[in-house]
Length: 417
Image 1 (cartoon, rainbow, N blue to C red):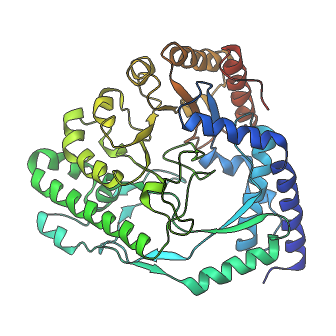
Image 2 (spheres, rainbow, N blue to C red; image 1 turned 120 degrees about the vertical axis):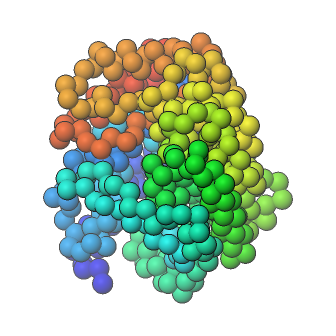
């Protein structure tokens, strides 16, 4: 039960969000993203996702609601307001409040085990549960469970709370992303998978084949239960970006049953960052390509350097967005990609720690913008994986201001709307 005080606060925050969402600049930004995602513009787009650093920008002490549920809702609203006030990026503030359908799966038959770090926010250590080829027999295909009653109840509650202020809508499965290596290394161990490429290649292929089939079955269940939702909107896509496009849904869409051909999807294999293009192409890419083939527009990659793997990545069906990591050779990538796909560049987040150097950041951003301009790339700059800003939140403001100035300096983007 939401208290009267929490209800009043949430509704006040929602009104502030709605006022921002109604500003003409938001429609203009949506139009720019639509052109960008459809490769019709070479103006760089900028997005900021503080991720781990949100703890320092909008800490628990900034919240006033009284229970975990309402504090979570308060945080979502305040995060939108904070981003609009501080980041000179191209994020679209919408007038929507989405309510996810209550969906779960039965899992893969084995539970991931990890050895936690003794340090706060430290890295975990793998604790494998698949130790030999025979252990693959313990895996099971997940079954989807949809709780329609709980979904309807959640929707009614949010409509009653926000319905006269925000556009409350329910979504099913809108973010489609395949992480085969992440899933498998969690069960097998990262070092073990590296060794398996030489010592147990058949085992690794068998595992990938099983996980591929399991994901095909998941998608079929989503279709049968009518759980897929359109993502040609502000839905987060791949490892940074959104789905605004006028290319979707595909012809034949009936308005009620979303198909894979109406959607964006993505995949990545960060765990194989250090393996050769040949090993990447052998042990994971074919499985990912078959999973992505039914979808209309696809993204690929995250933090892994794909510089030497782009020829293979470009064979993915309907590839539209490719992640260019902080460790990638942007010159080589720009020359290879040109304007054929979205150049989804992830500038190095470490520039926000230690001694923030505005001149260095400016030169760093300027180089990539100019290289991409020279090759006609469709560039987006996605600042993410920022686990800390060392309690200097103003560094995000400075970074985005510099990024905006450099985009405008290059004549590649209009002044901020």
